[in-house]
Length: 128
Ligand code: I3S
Image (cartoon, rainbow, N blue to C red; front, side, top):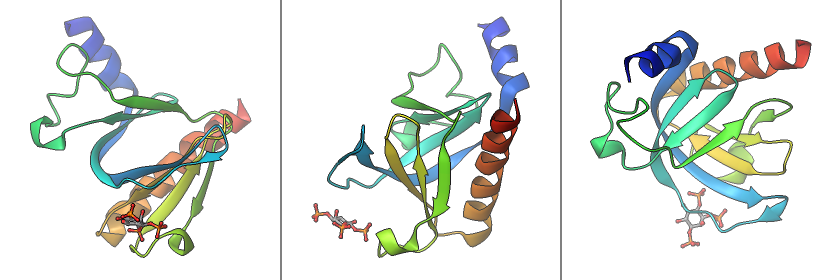
């Protein structure tokens, strides 16, 4: 556990609570289902954890909890998507495999930070 914790700490870019809904799977549209999600940007992946009430910054680490899903950011596309929701501060993440997620926060500065950090990871992967 200690080794995997150190491994995660070294690659951790960002973690926090966002509202999330998946809107497409493999290019096929899905019905929205907004839920709070503990979102962790680590290495080349965005990892989602369920049940934020039981998640704290120390409890999502490997061995302590199980991710709901994870997204490979290589080749992914990010765009602001306030046209796709009545909520404010919404952006869309689209993976190369055609999975699409909306992520949202009521806090303007927080959602901008997430957008910029994810975009910088995507840009880094594009340069590799
Ligand atoms: O894009 P939509 O279809 O207007 O999204 C809303 C619906 O998914 C709604 O659920 P039901 O129509 O299944 O009851 C959700 O409760 C809303 O949150 C969705 O819209 P927003 O604007 O919140 O993304």
